[in-house]
Length: 442
Image (cartoon, rainbow, N blue to C red):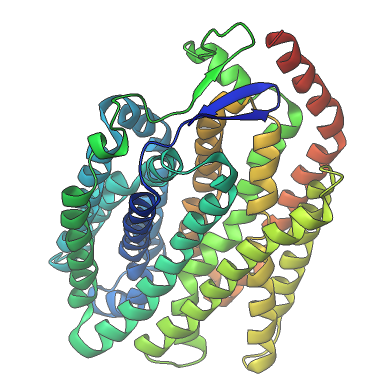
């Protein structure tokens, strides 16, 4: 039975292709792999203190081991996602997960900084497009009215994987050595890859042999495709406000990337906690950020239910308040008060992810939403998650880790400024885009 959903003038036809049970199996296994993805990525942070002592690495070198993954994710998400659409999403997922698991195993046997950097390069190569391809597979087997819930849950899986990677990595490293921390993450990834390849196939996802993407047609029934790269880029960067959404989100995630990378080391150095306990403390802060990511989106939706422009104001508030809380936190002396302020800052620091995603969706054509979200992910990685740990490490080598973390939250001011500019232009940009879409569909 076909279901028609009206979305900004575009008729999206959805016909269920798989059973509800199989759809949830697809979600569970794909969600499991995103957890493996981030466990393999973030386990490194838990063993920073050990690698620094054993190999005599500088903070800049430690930061580069983290940033190389985010850099590759940022650079390759777009092209590899396009290749996956052509080659087959399931085969691409199996190949990507196998690659990052194998590379994580290579980290376990690395004997030098150079070898570890090379292994982390391939971790990033394997993980580069998984986020966009994984969510595309999930959305292809569920009805449109569940997409926001599923996308939010999938994103939360990344934060959960980060928590598990740091927490379990620290515990395993303390008991069995840092090499087993990487090895255990690799084994978990390999196990999921085998199950995924056995249970999910392209044919089972689409028994009729049709494309995984919903059919999108204009009012004359002609497929509305963006075949020209020039036209596609024009649609992705069609207004001042959408560019501000990309850049503002990217700037705001700078603090998130730096905190995730350096919190275990900060707690280890300044609170004199062993590696396993430092990893657990840092994991709690990341979990707080994950809760803020989900809750922040819910609050933004409720506040802006009748006035979408309020999402910009919510994003501005999140940026400013999180930056202020983190600035105050790192100025306070070591102790409970500092941890409370840092926890409050982490609760809000990723709260802009929901509003930013909504802005991007509102300001782009429905037929390129997946590509638009890949562009948002590109901005988050290139402006924040990649440079955040590395630049913080460079500054830490000169003025100490505490000094670097005291400066880091100032980037939130730049994020708030971008969101403010976007807010100013949003109404006119949105009206123009809606008019163009209406004319196109006549």
